[in-house]
Length: 426
Image (cartoon, rainbow, N blue to C red; front, side):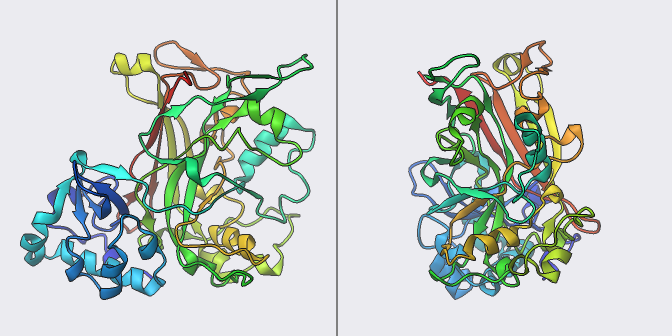
């Protein structure tokens, strides 16, 4: 539902919110932050400030005020959609009406002075594979027939590792794993030489479902609380040796980076767009995955960018090099279809569960979401502004992912930082 909180003309008494690239008043994302010496607590980003929601709980709708009492957002994510919408509307009023500035002032903190934490206690993490261009590109590197027969029938996914999800800024330790080099018989155990990024969106589950009770596709959107940026790091050499017959394991479970802010489903309403029509000859999804409303508004107009720096680039003050400019509309399956498929067997989702979309690449070479694709499996190195070359990531390299939702007539909103630096395993 698009309402007054999305009005492009709406302004805030928080000066830094005006025209802010990520957090104008039209956004109001949710996160968990702390100040030095204080415990983590819920907040919302507004410009370059963070509003302490626990401190103003008495000014918020009753159920929201109760749900933000703890150090995670699980309770808030699990509220019905209308309750989350009421919270957004109240925050919009408080931050746009100057009469509330004095009351909220003591609970505003400069974001640069705050520490961000995981926004929710992630009970389970599932990584999907809904980026068809990525799936096709990777398939071409591995087999004669790029897409397996099930791809266009099933939103492919696998169970990830929730315990190794980390917030933006936490270094990624180069993983060690078993791998087999070309023209050898026995595998070896060594640090990966083919460390890669994966450009994804994370889908935060809101209200869950009871075990044995699938979520209908027509209701799946109400179980999505918001989106985040996600980088599901991959050790390609480890993955190549281990992934058959059960799929990736150590190649993927060592670290997943997410942006700390949850851009709510309510904030994203103006940026819902039709799902891209399937090419001629592709099958229509089975009934449990088909909903006309989801096809009409189930995709998101979100621009996704990947950039990188090396240690040498940072030492010389060189700006990050853009590696990719992708688009969330390149997803073959919608977020709602992911939820419906995940639960069709009766699996119970819970508030705070996280679903990764899988790598999102566009059909254009400029929109590839992994180095495996950009460098054609390591055969075509990229050259950095320093003259350094890369096929995969070296220690000291930093990957930066950003995202912006755009729609004509509405203020663009962003996701904040999703970045991490590679460090040696030793």
